[in-house]
Length: 445
Image 1 (cartoon, one colour):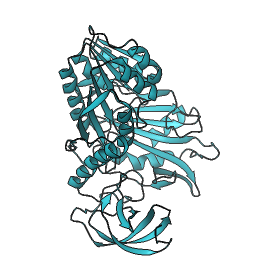
Image 2 (cartoon, rainbow, N blue to C red):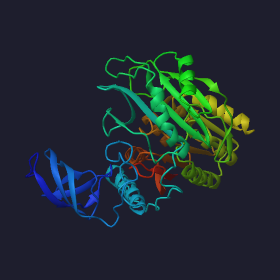
Image 3 (tube, one colour):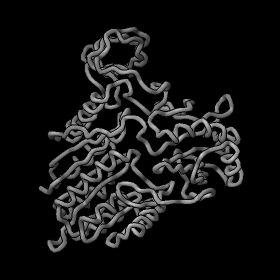
Image 4 (cartoon, rainbow, N blue to C red):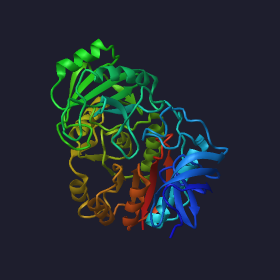
């Protein structure tokens, strides 16, 4: 039992970083988690939570700083829930992410493997091509910014150093637009404006306003009168009471769509479609996936959780037939549009739940006459168990798994019992945060 009480002030030395990027000390062999502390540092902290097998402290003072400690670039770092490790030098971030992947595989899947070094991002700030800004009712009326960590409380800010310069300049203008609408109230479901989503498409700005009802004319008027420099204005109506940002349909109400050149492809980006937020790292990741696919020499590639079809299109060069499976209809429509725009004729996109479609595609095993490569690129929640079971049973000789969550990756790898892990490569898709993208190659046992 830990000999600590709430409101105790402690001095301790940080041993490591937890998977959320928090410093971890040990008192009587019990972990104490302290946000903002780094390994090797001696710190003073206020104990704010005590449980049977762990405690949480609030950092009061760094008594002996780590040589890897740097000044955060963002004034709301530590308040906003977006970034976790801005105070850690970049080489330390890369090492932290490599270790996070290794620890998850070992502790959850009991897999010990020589993980490659984390592939760095070409840019550690200004790399994001997308931003989402919630608009919420508060005691003062309304607020626009980012959610605080583990909260739906808005941290107001006029800037985000992770974004491109054009998006950074737009954030204060969006505040002026938001003031013209009733902010969304999560408790009552009332209000007009829920979210802004902005994409920088190679210098062209696409703005989506997520609203609770049709506000077409007022949105156009507000954007023009506030001087927002946008090339596309979309309205997305979301009447649900859940936490999902987007409703099902988006309508272009101002401007025109033009092609965006991404990873060597011409595509038209839909607000509901998925696109990796870090183009520089996406190019490195997809090039590596395509290299592995080329080595597999497959006749057929099945791309599960295929999103807007960018990876599917790139894989089309490596097999006679490629099948993309995605549940979001708008994303599938974008994928079909992408194939037409790029003259790709050997791809078939299926709109459906991978849990239903993948077992059907893989039923009957894998005949020798058609060698199949399976690519899994699921959302943070990982693969559905039905998908895992179908992959285990299908007989495909190789699987490529792209993950944005080490914990669900490890869980799924532990269930892919028909396969051995051959290589693991982390990619730093999200500098300054705890998140890491991981590419895993598996061979059938």
